[in-house]
Amino acid sequence: MITTVKLPTPEALKPLLDEALEGGNLAPEVFINNHCAGLITTLAHNPLSYRAYGAYWWAVKRILLKNGFVELFQLEDEDEPATAEHFYIQDDVTTLCAAWAYMDVMIDAGHQLSNIHVYTDSEGEQFEYSLEDLDLERFRFE
Image 1 (cartoon, helix red, strand yellow):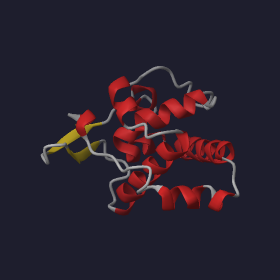
Image 2 (cartoon, rainbow, N blue to C red; image 1 turned 90 degrees about the horizontal axis):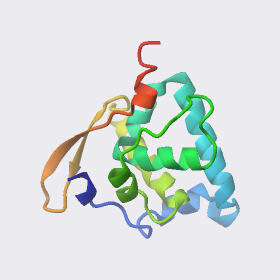
Image 3 (cartoon, helix red, strand yellow; image 1 turned 60 degrees about the horizontal axis):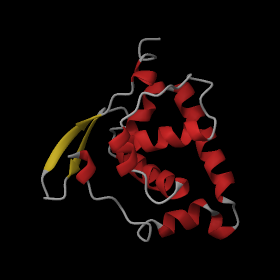
């Protein structure tokens, strides 16, 4: 069911993309590097903050791994391939912006550490998705 969630289109994300890339003044690679570095800093303070990304986490994690941000947590291949592929939108920048927008909603709602996320499928039915990345959950009791 998670692969039937309707995602925002690149066109709908354009204002956020423009903001992220400073109206075209920031190279996409710089945004990706800065965003990933910021996320790793956030995870260093609270490893469970990955949960705010909901199902986008798997696509975001792949972007982190692809860009070499693995050292701090020794992120491995804990993955949900179908979810990661579905929540990857067009390119790294667009995916990070969509995930950022989702995370922002979760934080505003006070659900930044919740591992339960509610999505609506293509039939309009709501369902719960439970997010658990053992690469980061292992830090929960440290």
